[in-house]
Image (tube, rainbow, N blue to C red; front, side, top):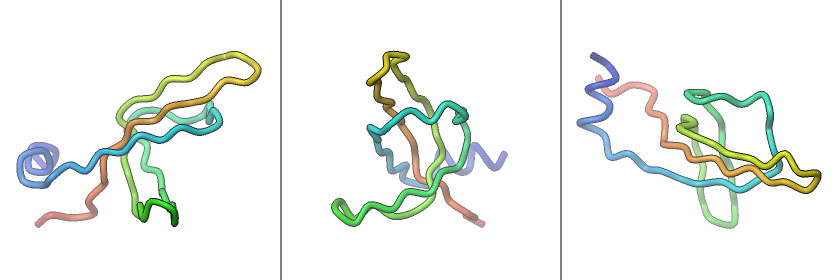
Length: 71
């Protein structure tokens, strides 16, 4: 029920991060993002990610803003 309320009542802000691979990360993990250059600050839930296993590979993370409590 909480998930349904979250999805239908809160505007879901989504971000995409490109970074060095974080291999222990998994979907639905809460991450804290602070970027002074873009002004993005807050906690986000990881929705999906992909990375290359090459020696110079990068990781792309898609996440949505996490809300502590709606009601």
